[in-house]
Length: 482
Image (cartoon, rainbow, N blue to C red; front, side, top):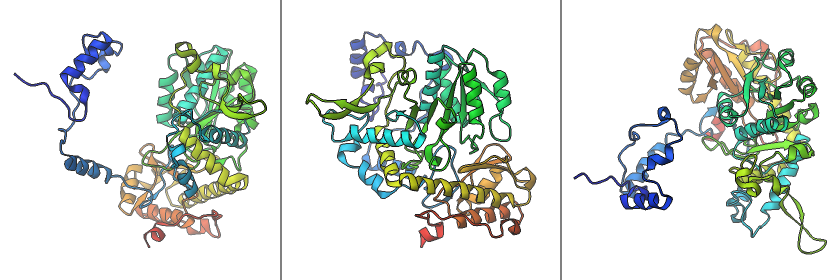
């Protein structure tokens, strides 16, 4: 008789443990838990996993080998972006969020508060100032979820289903948002023109069944939307909501979407003091005006000033608690979800350290270095820019005229220690620069790319060009190695 397999890492695979669990919930088999999952989505075979390593030293060696395959942007010159960015993280940020009173702040708990509530209140206040909004949530799981929630809020407020997607959206983000809202919203993509929204096309599709116009700025290709006010006015004329997905990193110098008529502004805070960490620490923000119609649709926690049992004294705690799923349970409009409170504290520390002047300088550096990189790569024969829009941090180049594919270029430049960008298709490369990318780094990319396509950059096109230095300029790879 064959003995049942018991996995050494998973105690509930033991037959007696499994039987006890099934008995406790009144189920006859594990299959009963998957009855709602369509048969064509189930895997009718065991997972293809290696044999478990029972000795600790063997397991440690195996996992260490897997981890060693990761390559850090500390050791390789990276122009990768597409949702996770290599920005400078001041040492103070890591020092503070590693303190014991903050490190376990999963959702702003527990009850013996040692400043968590106030720290998150300060984060919300700083974000509101940066975004020119009034109310900002405690960070939710990530920016993808925050955007999906923003659209869901618009659907609930208007009672409508159609959402016009006016910008180029990261494929991973579009997929996540679609999965989140597909039960009650229909996403309708409106092709962009010149890298930004086709405002005339959007206006022609607006009707009284449109819940929201969804705009991403910067877009998936880094294009900054120039016609937000026009889009907002057109959406509002039919009773629709303008939802803007964005990255807050540039609003020390760019005009915030709220000042162009945006109703809901949402996105990710990874750029604000969070490391890349091989995929990133992510947290989603949702920002609205001081309007109860919007505030009461926000599912996430909000921390604000609250009265205490002592007359005349105030503290920090949940506000508008009765709108959350904590209060309504299964009757809630949307669940509170996984909070990323620790990352909110990190972003709050980052914004405090930077201040308005620091954010302004950072925005100027990002715009200037992005434009310098665009000119440097466009000077290579056969390389063309994807569009003429204003770009922040990211942009695309068309390699069709070089005779090399984007995949070829990535492979060749990796051999010389450069990650040149993310291939979007055979001829298009998405390139990202930040304040961590020096002018010499950009020049090195241009020279290496020119060599890879068998050309020489037209140096005269860059004669006299320069970019401002960040207050704490990033070292080049050569300097890091010295």
